[in-house]
Image (cartoon, rainbow, N blue to C red; front, side, top):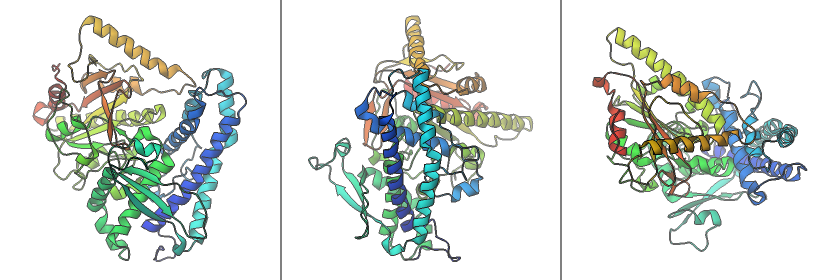
Length: 524
């Protein structure tokens, strides 16, 4: 099976090579994670509040560390698009790695988390561990092994379907999944003895991947690799995705997605809805349907039946399923005017279901502020010349209630699932207390500086913000795509609607009207 280009170099996009590379990456990253856990456990001055959960906590923290590095990729778009390595390298990061968020994440799991002694110990441990050097070495080892290996000894994936009724033989993590499961194992050559545990995703997610692959990549992949039949091509691509997200990244909270019924409601009203912080597994691909918060239906991966573009952190694996690349490099105007992305020239509704990561929020919302300023500037020029808007874009932000956002709109408090917001003076005071209590969490442990709340509020002013709701208790349902279940009460949540200032004839009041009808509120 040919895995090289005409000039003799490796064909980095070949499905078989991509999967084998991901296996090698998974094995080396797993070794780095184990060493990091051992370093934490061996530290004489660190005492962890939940030592039995340290493996999961450290693994998630390292996954977020990788995402922080990807968010700082200083290469041009073409060089970044050709990159196929999960590991951050010097070629990506001209200013070195960013470790501040990792220091914070580790400190939050320690007793006396914010004391100078604890913070100094964590900083010293991370500096001595030298993640940058380890990742650089691992990336070089993977490349060397790929160049020296014959394709005949590449690893291949094996798929096993676990029926919904088959419960007894499931692992602990598989028991949390609703419905049938697609379990992907790694078949290795007989002479190779390297442990690579299987990874699992809901069967509905696997079928969603196949729907996207058929729509976005089947034709081009088939033309480029005719010697591979469709079944093998898709299995290799899907297995690579599963290993990247469930094996390497392993940050389960990133597979949560915001209220799908609201997205379907906005979709039904004529928006082209796209997620900016997603993966092929959790990106919105629902059918348009008018709904309401009072009759919030359970979400399900089985309902994701409309292939849709999205932004994600790993375009090298995700582009075959509709990814347009990083949200930090997303060009709003180009997407609006693209005959591929938005063929019907519908107004864009871009959602930021932000990850539980202060550093990524700072970068994502700083990008949003810049995009909003450009949109307002271009709209002003169009109005002066009496031209139609160059593009139309509104936003929905869904974020954990960690920040006290000073938006110039009265916040609505939702405390009863399915009920209307509360609005009395007493309840307003209660909401202020809730916001202050929740935002105080950011002062725990090693603190990471951020400026976006004030910048966003100032840019939005009164002209952009059309909804600001606070949901506490079990009033906001997240959907976890990796378990195929709705999860109420994950955390207190803030939902903000931002509508691009424009004339009513151009849909200037549309988003505010739709929020009011969905949540049963009054328009301002």
